[in-house]
Length: 349
Image 1 (cartoon, one colour):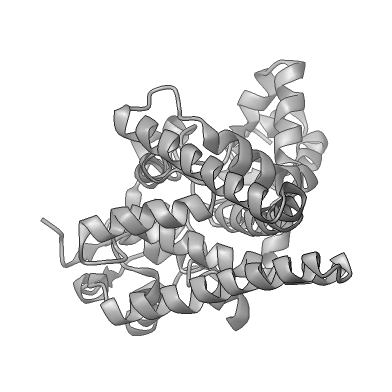
Image 2 (cartoon, rainbow, N blue to C red):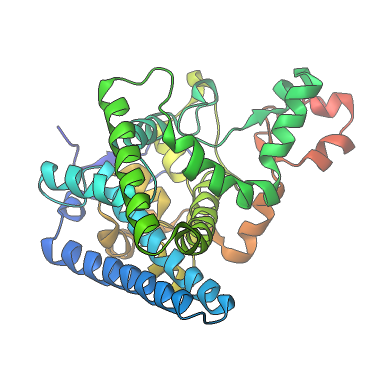
């Protein structure tokens, strides 16, 4: 049974008590419906406009500019998909599944596969002993120093901002999402296959109607920009200065939510595009709260306002936090690792 009261008295850094969160969990058909309308209709409208511009041979840079706007709406589509994965967007479980599959296809993401991995992430976030499924690859200093030259190279490539936000979105959404993870059950495999088949059919329709070059001229920049925004949001929500990580014996799910997930305060336009996902600490405390209730929840519960604020400007430094220093309980950069003495690396300096 859902607890109406979360006690954090055992957490020294949060000696507070969160009030009842149940009221914020209730989905709203009106809010959900309006959000779908003001997201999907503009997205499809922009696609129609870009197709028209390309076929009329308008300068391609106009299409590129519109693709950036369309990417913002695709991010909103993914947030709705994300809520459907938590079964929080609609009252009906069936509606969450149906719309989850539809919006997942628009975002090149298999619903059941991504849902499984994402729920794993929620259950293990901030836990150093349970990394590797549904999260960003993060090594500790000791692990990095003990790894082979090849492993270090791969890790540095993975954590390179230009590659992570440039090549990464295409690789993740276009390539890796076409496969299921090694331990996938039948449900996840079926979801990946269904998504792939429908995507092939959609691409086939575009191929015979507008041509593959026109389709790619629109889809590639849209998925690249939207994917980069999505990866950045997911990255910065758990990779920032002061973030919480701990081994299993010391790990606290409450601290993982409030200290290991950021409150990312974005400008209003970006908050609208990202559908309040910046209130990530609230989302990790109660994933059942739909995105359209997160702002109200934050406003009405003072305890949730005590967490560290991460601004857009401050978040940029997160790009250069690469390794978890277990002895110092913080993320450090590759450059910082070089400057540490052997004693400091081992936590003795």
